[in-house]
Image (tube, rainbow over all chains, first blue to last red; front, side):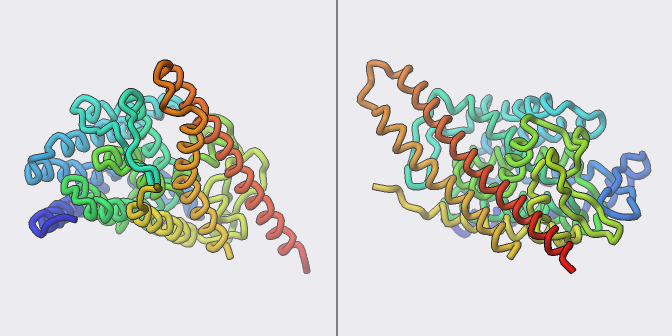
Length: 333
Length: 84
């Protein structure tokens, strides 16, 4: 458990991150709108144009938190700087994808490169802790798994960024759960970064929730997803993070399993959900459309966009609660 | 009902991650124990391959459960809508 000083500093860093995100969004959104960097909100009947790439504010919040953490918790400055490096690289890849779409195969490979700061600074421990099992020695194979640990959550988070507030709301919940686990484990750097991430994403959610005034774009979703991956490695909470990300993994796995390959949303001809004339969304019955989480949620009947996001947030709260409980599971005899 | 079914699916996925890794590790270590030190590299590769095979079987089961839930729910909703 963190001591009082570390706890206060964790709160200070989180406030700085949320303030950075919250205060930069309005200016960034109007700047992006002036330059025509807007996206269509396809799940609204009136199809409004919304400023895209506002996830840059989340990146700014996370970078501010990382830099502050490296100064305040100087003993683990490498961990905080590796986090900043990973977020910046993933954010840059996201920005390139927003401006000139990368292919469905190139994007995961490039996001794997965001693991470079962690590998170069050596801020990983090749002995991950698994529930019931305890510590596992993966000295040789672990460095090869680090790029996967960044690329998989980055792209899984990106794949769930489909509705107003779906990415920011659910990932804020996951980050909060990870922050609690890291507070319990006494990891001040990890706790400060995780809580800052929850605070920054919540600030972003206030603008991104239904009806969205800003879109995060791939710059936001890839950076935030990569940040979760980096947290799991730096904080040594790999298995707990996998459990917390269950709805994201479900969404990504169902999509990949039903299409049978890596795909981009824009490549799919058979859409998983359809906007009805009354503004509600319903699951399509086309056999070759991907069975995404949204399509699963809509299987029992149509819902409004904000209702789908509420269901996603409840499911993430369930997985986050199980993730916290996982931390307390003792090693099996 | 929708939340209960989907919540159950999330609980299944989370618990299969927790208990699945445990069972896979125990099973793999039982089949290929650490005492085989003279073939360490081969043993490690076989362990990874066996773990991947078990994980693939687990993912197939997961996919079957999801598909069954989805198509059954879609069918039930369509029948309910068509009934007068």
